[in-house]
Length: 192
Ligand SMILES: Cc1cc2nc3c(=O)[nH]c(=O)nc-3n(C[C@H](O)[C@H](O)[C@H](O)COP(=O)(O)O)c2cc1C
Image (spheres, protein in one colour):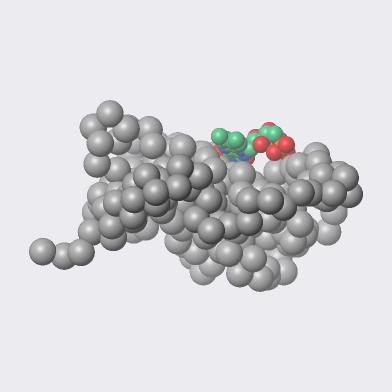
């Protein structure tokens, strides 16, 4: 039988939680943030906005991927991840398929497809919503990371017209995956 990485993460999360109740996994508990640091965070949250006009320059995706790694997830499963779409043809296809990004998202440098693995979400009580919550946490994490890295970002919801769903799924997803939306990322001259 193949290894179930999601179940392993879930089980080790439960063990850590039972032993410490903090689930901070060894991170510093005692960092006190200065007034300046608090102000900076507030500025980042205030200045963040959705960007839909891009200048064609390429971006460094690494800070964004590192931020995604740090996002919390339900029971630390990390059942949601991204596919990086950067070739022109696929971006143009997505600009036709993603209802919330029609006509503009292909101009971004990169499109991150946010995808959940169904195998990670086993509880019948949770499987209809938990992956969307995990995706939401990733979305805001990326918005904030994009803001501090001068990268334009806009989330596009997972709405795809019924008649296009099969084509989308076959081209972009594996069998056990659910689409949770897309992050559109690129450089800009001036914030939109
Ligand atoms: C759950 C969610 C779905 C969104 N879907 C889309 C979308 O499909 N297309 C789009 O252009 N913007 C989308 N947005 C961006 C919102 O329109 C935007 O966040 C909102 O208008 C506030 O503007 P701001 O992000 O610039 O502060 C979405 C945002 C959220 C949180």
